[in-house]
Length: 82
Image (tube, rainbow, N blue to C red; front, side, top):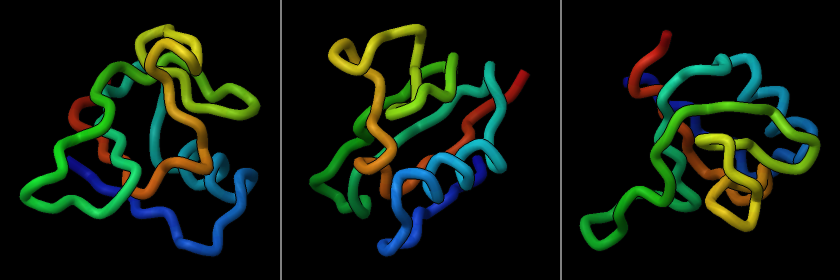
């Protein structure tokens, strides 16, 4: 598993660029919106299916159905890749 932590001062464009450099379509990812603690579980786990303008598409889902906005990503990890 390879983690990418988004710098706190990164805007949406910078976050999207960092994520695109780190991941590829088809990777299975784990996205967290804040630091992991014992009480905090993973926010989203699934297959990366798209780099949309405002969000990271997971499992082909829309933003309302489980994908993640770039400005909500704290850490993203690649679990597996194709």
